[in-house]
Image (cartoon, rainbow, N blue to C red; front, side, top):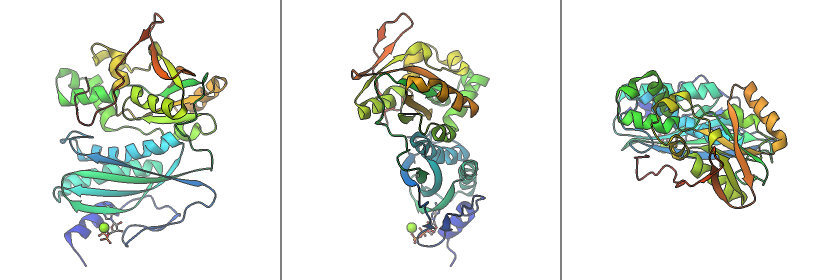
Amino acid sequence: MSSPEFDLIRQFFTEQTVQRPDVLLGIGDDAAIVSPSATESMLVSADMLLSGVHFPEDTAAHAVGHKALAVNLSDMAAMGANPAWVTLSISLPENNSEWLSGFSQGFFALAEKFGVQLIGGDTTRGPLNISVQITGFAPPGQALLRSGAQPGEGVFLTGSLGDAGLGLRLYQHPNDAARSTEGLQLIQRLQYPQPRVAAGLALRGLASSAIDVSDGLAADLQHILTASAVGAEVDITRLPLSRAYRSLCGGRPWQQAVSAGDDYELCFTAPMAQEKDVLSRLAALGCPCVRIGEVSAQAGLHWRDAAGQLQIIRARGFDHFQENIT
Ligand code: ADP
Ligand code: MG
């Protein structure tokens, strides 16, 4: 039987190139049927994106589709898991074909890149709200948890920090800087985060703990420290700041960078003896990574500047009730 709701689902959510052999029945029935690996552990996570909260309301549909999946893939990356299946529950204010077409193209382009299959979901009418659930796999005992950091280990960070946060500010206040090459690069980082899935997989057996930086390094590294009952000292001169970020951030570059969210880089710990191995494995994947500090036995997150002085920052992550991050 045809109905606008089913037509919409068929038109925008059933055509995908990824067809995994472990999906026995995909979209179309009351439930999907999957055949999980008999030898691996299954990891499940979900992330919701609200219009005006997790992305500016006028964000291009293609970017929203990308981001809805990217933030979920990033959780799999942070666990060292291989992503496999997703469900998509979406509430839409209207049946807008142009918007849906852009959204599904952004979503499926990224799904294809990671071999992830959309196996079901729900579609309702209401304020724009997107909820994705993701399932992935890792060998038993090999997933990367937040709780394994040990004193004396290194603290590492992939990519660069603060780009997406600055990109949001530029997007919200479009001026000449926002339209410059660097400004556009930063806005691209905000709208098209690239989940570090390959890096997460490469860190299995090397990293002792990991998290993805979604709410800002200060907040997210603190989650590792709390879960591991340790502290850390971060050398602020080692924080990786992109050229675009440096050229447009204005004052207080590192303070802004450690409290800005949405970068979806990986922060992890590993024994110092593994540092070379960590850096060369990630370099082989084209994933930049630096050691930014050291785990300490004493609780607390400390920031040390070039002069060796300890700096205090108000370690507040991205606040959902206050969009202004400066
Ligand atoms: P039911 O009413 O039995 O829950 P639905 O009408 O919600 O079924 O959905 C019909 C089929 O379409 C189901 O297989 C469901 O998983 C799938 N589906 C619905 N919405 C989406 C979506 N946004 N993305 C992917 N699959 C969807
Ligand atoms: Mg339903």
